[in-house]
Length: 343
Ligand SMILES: *[C@@H]1O[C@H](CO)[C@@H](O)[C@H](O)[C@H]1NC(C)=O
Ligand SMILES: *[C@@H]1O[C@H](CO)[C@@H](O)[C@H](O)[C@H]1NC(C)=O
Ligand SMILES: *[C@@H]1O[C@H](CO)[C@@H](O)[C@H](O)[C@H]1NC(C)=O
Ligand SMILES: *[C@@H]1O[C@H](CO)[C@@H](O)[C@H](O)[C@H]1NC(C)=O
Ligand SMILES: *[C@@H]1O[C@H](CO)[C@@H](O)[C@H](O)[C@H]1NC(C)=O
Ligand SMILES: *[C@@H]1O[C@H](CO)[C@@H](O)[C@H](O)[C@H]1NC(C)=O
Ligand SMILES: *[C@@H]1O[C@H](CO)[C@@H](O)[C@H](O)[C@H]1NC(C)=O
Ligand SMILES: *[C@@H]1O[C@H](CO)[C@@H](O)[C@H](O)[C@H]1NC(C)=O
Ligand SMILES: *[C@@H]1O[C@H](CO)[C@@H](O)[C@H](O)[C@H]1NC(C)=O
Ligand SMILES: *[C@@H]1O[C@H](CO)[C@@H](O)[C@H](O)[C@H]1NC(C)=O
Ligand SMILES: *[C@@H]1O[C@H](CO)[C@@H](O)[C@H](O)[C@H]1NC(C)=O
Image (tube, rainbow, N blue to C red):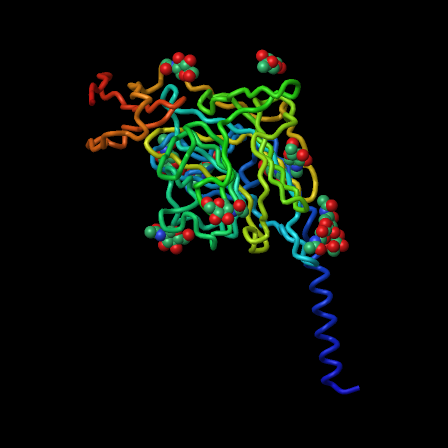
């Protein structure tokens, strides 16, 4: 036998062995966190775990971003034939704001090829993208956004929605937050600013290429009908292998803390249900601590705001759309509400 032949044989065997090892290390990843320990996740930005086990993605500071990742990247592809695996995940979350009825900007669950979001922006970019990277198909990011701000520039539908984002914050599908009743199908709206804990389920069927997002108040059984159900071929999105899974969050003008109480994930199976009795509680913000905000209802006839906000304290002014009405929020300075008018 020639040495060339032997060498080739050894190389081939090594390659096969390597492929077998790599293939067997994917497809069955799963984890469950009923509350978090400091070493369970890796953090970036202002994100951290509190002493009672809450994942705190943002911390009441403005213009901030935070990320938390499962420390090991996961394989989303069957190496034998390239198909994207089915997966499912569920988490309980809640937002606490320094203001009454205003918060921002929101959070996402995401799958990403990178842990490096240093170039990403907060506010409407949710800590995942910036003006130039937003929408770029080379991002290879899937995100489910939970958004409490109406940003017309990124085509948000309202200031209280859930969306499926592929490579950018202009959602491929979105819906007002809430759920459909199992018996009669009626829709119940959920306020993301209610400061109550809620649960989201994200289920992807790799064969059907169907992505479902379902939500409900905490402790309610998962509603049968998803809030969002979209046919999405993730084969060109989840291109890198392995990929990181985690949460991102951002604030803009409004001091808000975005929390995750528990999280479970399973590749090729149904995520283990969370044990509500083990979850930490969402902190309660005392209502008399709330910063005062003036709310002004603008004519619903306007399709766009007919004015520009150019105040020195523009960071303290926000604009949003609620039930089809434009709303301006102005932070009160020294307890004096700003007065303004326009025609
Ligand atoms: C996942 O698969 C690997 C390789 O087949 C195996 O060693 C491991 O025990 C499996 N893990 C679970 C949780 O089933
Ligand atoms: C990957 O695909 C191959 C070929 O269809 C199949 O035999 C195998 O079970 C799949 N592996 C996983 C982890 O789904
Ligand atoms: C999370 O960390 C805690 C310790 O802080 C540990 O007991 C627990 O097993 C970890 N959970 C997982 C799913 O790794
Ligand atoms: C938020 O966290 C950052 C970084 O850990 C810190 O500098 C900042 O003071 C915190 N803000 C508040 C309001 O706690
Ligand atoms: C996270 O919290 C721990 C204490 O709970 C603290 O020691 C650590 O510095 C914090 N990390 C960041 C980045 O703020
Ligand atoms: C790959 O294998 C999986 C699991 O066996 C199967 O469901 C899927 O249809 C296969 N995809 C292709 C493109 O053959
Ligand atoms: C907050 O919003 C809820 C629901 O829209 C409303 O009932 C309540 O009066 C609002 N509270 C304040 C202080 O504006
Ligand atoms: C936007 O983000 C990308 C990485 O995704 C980075 O390469 C680029 O420099 C950033 N652009 C700006 C203007 O910050
Ligand atoms: C998502 O929407 C963008 C346009 O906003 C489109 O280019 C892309 O093909 C869509 N992706 C999927 C997977 O539907
Ligand atoms: C649907 O059922 C819910 C209770 O499950 C009830 O509150 C609601 O009024 C019903 N709506 C209609 C349209 O029947
Ligand atoms: C998604 O929702 C549809 C409609 O309810 C359902 O038929 C399908 O089985 C669901 N798929 C997953 C993966 O949850």
